[in-house]
Length: 415
Image (tube, rainbow, N blue to C red; front, side):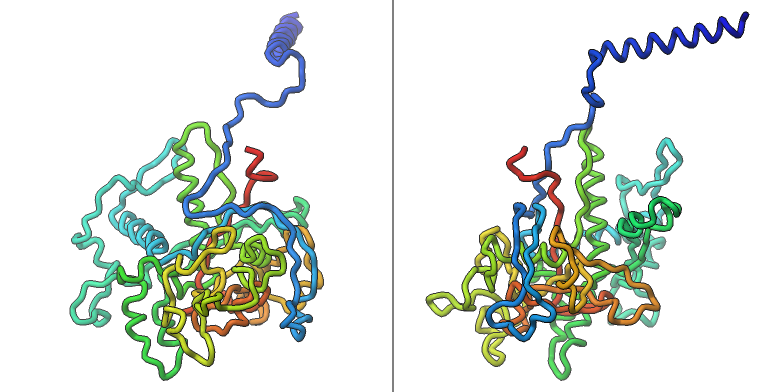
């Protein structure tokens, strides 16, 4: 009898709860209420690129490259892109963050949340003269001229990503952890590439000064590998999300990332389909004979365009999307893996060919697409459709990057 009474009471309570919920929603299918707000974001230093269609393939002057650039019509989802290449000073924010996080960990500046997770307490002050931080600097024979200099080999940062392609094809058969990938990289720019890239050429002043001297603050960062560029994007996402987490009722955005190959090409053309250069014309000079980008004109007249090496990231006029130096200055990493015949099998909706190489893979699987050409390249490499590559773990004095961010919606006009 008691058991029957308990069952009746429970049933009655459930009926009241269901009835109250139904009353609150008026018995209608209206979805879950009290959802977080979402107004979209307009990231600082980025411009909006609307969705559209792009015709990729060889230009009139590139018939011989039809094998690696077969004609194809593709569609690109709207996205944001940095209006300039990431500059030395912007990248230095990342370096300082890693340096400070190491110092806080050496000083044991941690706090614990309600779930037992430990986080760096950024409110703690750092005493850089403390003996506890001496390990961050060169010691003994590694010191040069008695200077107290940061040991850049300590600048390690671990980033992670989720392999959505593998997870999708696995269909839930494997644990989630098998698709979470991690990589630990040194994030300090390889300044020695200025010497290593050019045999019998005096570029030591660039090695000593390019990344640190205030004269180059607004110049594009170079000497950054594809892996390190991805680490920067991961850090930038965490930086933004930590801020968004402090704004009550707001949700995080998509992740910052490297643009995929044809996203980059679509943005470079500035809304002019099949334009050979970002400014739309067929020539590298304007009507007055002035060069329109920073590259290697003629047979090597490097300073003719106004810069012997790189120039400021916002030099020259932007294209019609408001993007600077999509041709020349620094070539740019993309997220895409390089395969000669990729145009033969990529999809026509947001095409992106990616591959996470393994240590024992052949070098051919470690090639990543770079676009745009650089200050040391001839005009051919500045064309919007020209494809080129570098190995993912290499650093060059002529390769930088910029970030992209997928737009969540059909069009900015939806908001």
